Length: 69
Image (cartoon, rainbow, N blue to C red; front, side, top):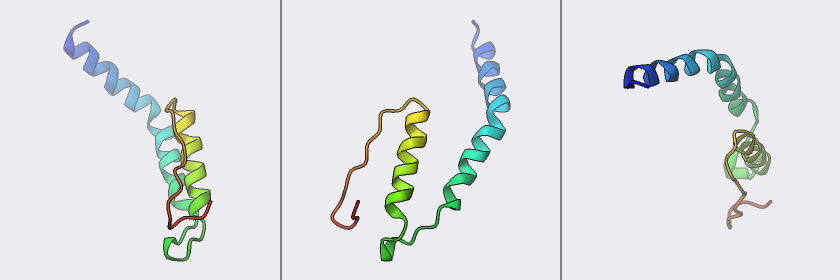
C-alpha cells in the first residue's frame, strides 16, 4: 500500500469516527470536579480509566497524597 493510500485510510477513519470522538470529548467536562476541595476527582479518574480501557489501553488509578480514593 502506497503512503498516500495509508494516509487516505487515516483520514477516512478520522472522518468516520469524528462524531463518536467528539461525544467522548464532550463527556469530560460534564463531570463536576473541584480539585482544591477534592470534589468529584475520584469519579473523574475512575471514568477516565474506564474510557481508556474501552479504547484498548491498559490503565490503572494511582492514588496520590492529595487524592482520597
